Image (cartoon, rainbow, N blue to C red; front, side, top):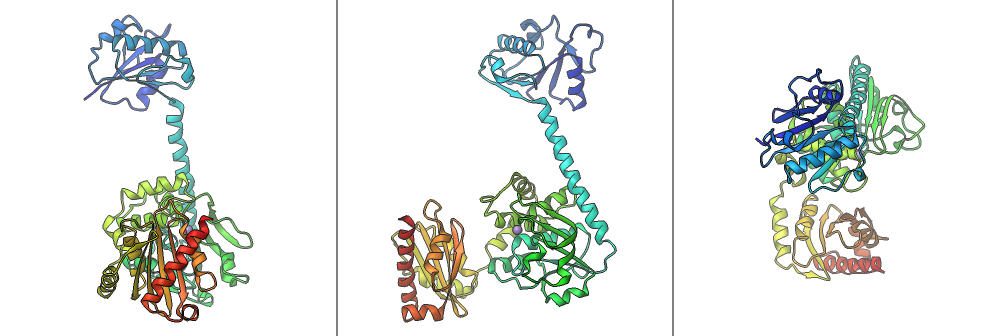
Length: 464
Ligand SMILES: [Mn+2]
């Protein structure tokens, strides 16, 4: 193993080095200051003859060894660097000092300056952050402990962030669904969100505001009470716990509120809770929270904080890739594949647009086909369209360096339906009735032509 040769300036620093755990591969040396000669720190040896090249050569430095120099005295550091460079011209040197400024030392081929204080300080700060989160969890647990039945209320049409947080909070309080169900005033609608609850086996019960009276505890995650309209039910106005990352709202009471608008996802808050109490993070929970962060931040794109990135990294090591794939790539039904096949047999890329019109399909097939369509050579835009119930539904993807997909889709559906999205992903819905009124019919050829022209117009309009 390559050695680290450590040179400490004085006994104080040498003792600090021991305190924080000197490594087995470290050769520990120190240079006593005046009147320190008898205070040799254990395991350290004094540089024989002081800080001179001969003393370094006596340590028998080999190719591959590296040096660490710790001191708060710029003169000592300059001398040490000069001595080390003379003894072993190519050895890398790490200088650890809080006092030295980079311009106080001559440029070296392979030298890095580290701050001893911040190296230790950052760890302290992180521990105190964990402690703050631990306090939250303790408070929440104590508050809910004596309650028989607690509702975890999500926003209507719950999204992955909310679902993951409900699941995490229930795990953190040691409860199961009978005494702490996830509830919502509206059902889980979006196909990707349905895929998530199906893959994870999480139940979200739809109930009316009146039905909240059967609970003696109420927690809101990823949502705040005043979201529920002008006159939210009284039970919602007075809640036990609110955990959210949306901007803080007023006009409601909560015994505990933890609102962190700088966070990209509430799942990040729950991940920090879990870490603070050293919760055993099972793959299923890790996957849910990871997907919560991923979908709320558009894969760490918009509105992402360092907290989100740290939590994402933590969860990534523990999640189940197979489970995540099942959520993001739900199994395609055979008739959906046949519809794709028919559409692919006539496919072409025109004006950088690759459009696949599928006819009547299950809704979750459409976004997956849109993902696939973008792989066509020459495609800057991919559009997959299908008929779901009484609507024409289409998913849009683009390569990212063109106009924002959300804006283009809004222009396409203007006056006809609803739509929107982000930079590279968007979705539009046009009721077939409205489509027929404008274009006469709603067969595949008409849809293909109408959407193509509308997209060309919208993309060009955006470019003006
Ligand atoms: Mn959220």
